[in-house]
Image 1 (cartoon, rainbow, N blue to C red):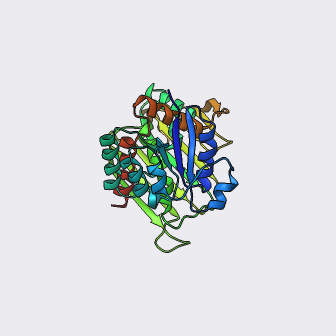
Image 2 (image 1 turned 60 degrees about the vertical axis):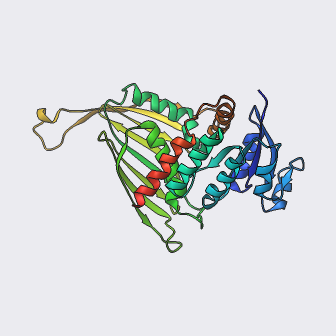
Length: 321
């Protein structure tokens, strides 16, 4: 099949990572780049064709796909522009800042017969996929609870808060690992650096099958973390998602039958890590890019296709209720 000719809108922190990844993805060719800072475009390569503005890029007949790597507040307008032009579209998370807008993009992509893909990178991490296999196979027993932490210092945004910037990763992973409907979701947000822009958030979630979850997010933390813990009736797992430190650990444990215990403390026996899988050389972003190409060429929806990621936006919005 012919290469997917992609135009990239935005060359900021993540846009530069996308450019590097796209250039190294088989079947994907970076055709043109659009960024308001022309010096930034020149800095990443003289052989890049620059475009004056996003509208011109979307109208370019040489472009078959558009990647939107701009601030979240711009995702809806730019993605809609690309889809209306009949282009396949890669959008950074979140897909939009309103559920009605996310659904509009999904409907527009379907009407145009093009791919809408959201960069929920962790869904393409082989370790997260292995965690899914363990849960589905019953290795953890009955699933009880999932705990998410995404913490670190810096990268404080001004156009959107920590909930809308960081929670899409964790809500996407939650829906992947525990696909039952969300029965209730609520978030508490705290603003310290800027008025009305939360830099810390804690969410509690209850699924229709009784599984619970919590999400802790902070842009103000001395500890850097991107972790998931899943607790089941006979096993637990921990996923560490920080690049360079990726690891998946399985823990066996046994809780003594409370009916057989006379003391006030119920013993836990045999608690130990029984399997540790270190992350390999694979880069989840590169795997996501390869899946995007496959989805465009085959027409089959990816795990983070717009129709699935729109549900994440619905949950983000519902939590603020």
